Length: 333
Length: 293
Image 1: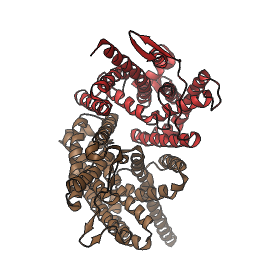
Image 2 (image 1 turned 135 degrees about the vertical axis):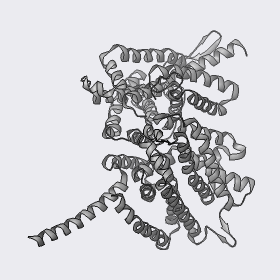
Image 3 (image 1 turned 180 degrees about the vertical axis):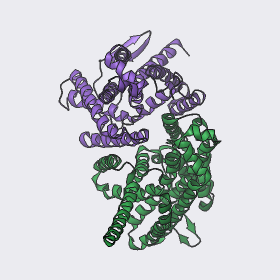
Image 4 (image 1 turned 60 degrees about the horizontal axis):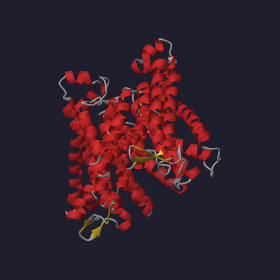
């Protein structure tokens, strides 16, 4: 079962990359491209969250704080200090990694619901600090006019944001390769082992504390970079990035996509970003409809849309296989 | 610091503590029986205030505050049952129930907040206080409304405690919290009691909303902030018992009052979170928590 999935992975991946490369030339409208860029960034954030929450089984609710720290880190470094945006974005990633190390300390001894509560409290704490330090972060108003990404003689926003689009594609691809490599590596397997049976895994010599730190920091790296990239694209760092709105959007991307799949959240990021934007004229109704949809998907597709997609794949295979079987049985009679 | 200031801090701490205790008990009740954390709890607070306003206020039906409170508590109980049936029951058999419940209750909170916004508008409203006027005690004055909260909240908490300790239904709820399978074997209707604990938690949250509506202006998102505080309280007190969060609520209320006085309102929230994280590092099951993690 795992074998067959593997052998198809390359084919589907090539198709997906092809689609990402062609998409901007079909969807030329600036607003559609904007949505695509947002979806790509959300896909990075959600699939990295999948590492800690899905594979690691750590109910880490500070993930959004890692993203926001990336956004603010970029803002402070690129605007206030004046570091080149190209350097500030990876540095934003490292800043999030540092934050992840800090979060990891209090939760090393905790389990289940307490991890949710502490990580949630941590992000509230970061939010409080950001709001109260208005000299540095702009307080409730946030920071505006962050430096955009530029190459000599080329602003990324030109040609209908084409530069930002491909930048985001590269970001998603490198993040996804990193995640796939990590979860298939011995470290990734030991993270999953800890999730499935902590006592057994620990008795086999896996360090719970060390793996938790690795899981959190690894999931923060590309999340922080995505935060920095988001800051360079939107050019605003605002406390809204910590809000319940973005939190539930990303969490639903993750759960509707299907946890412990990495590809599921990526797929769901595109789906949910576009569905949500398509209903933007409906005002409050939009949030209500999305909320109902999320609960419905969770009731009817427990494994998310990724499970539905693989289910369809299995169905196709069974139909093809069935036809072959019937043919051979007809021949034998 | 004069004795008056100390008394003032004490009283405002007890007012805050009373409200937090009512909220935290609801959260802890749902957690102990169902094993999930209800993020829609804050919206139950908001709806409690809005239901009461709709029935009580002159711009609504205008039937007076008593009718408003009665209707609000009943409506919240019904809503609690409904929430349990839609948001929790379909997922009870899943391994990742805790996580799924987080997203379904968050989704419900979004749904209810926007529904409130649609039907009642974003403009701030205020609920009539429980009692008019001010009273002064020991040289400090406080509103009769706040005095009423300080008196009523412990009474409600005490009756919840009596209900859990002295009635058959209450014992059944505690039995489920301790060992669900054994409770099921003993013939306890576990599914029905899940709905009951949700309903009870929701009506307690509704009461908090009514109390808050008489102090602050009401808005569709008025429940979010108190819910975050209640979260701190349950972590601080240990979520796996009912008495832990109650004691923690008063501790946090007093701590907050002291912090607001000494370091200002901006840093108070941050200080509370730091204290809470520190407590958890030393005692992973909360300050008053037992061994259950």
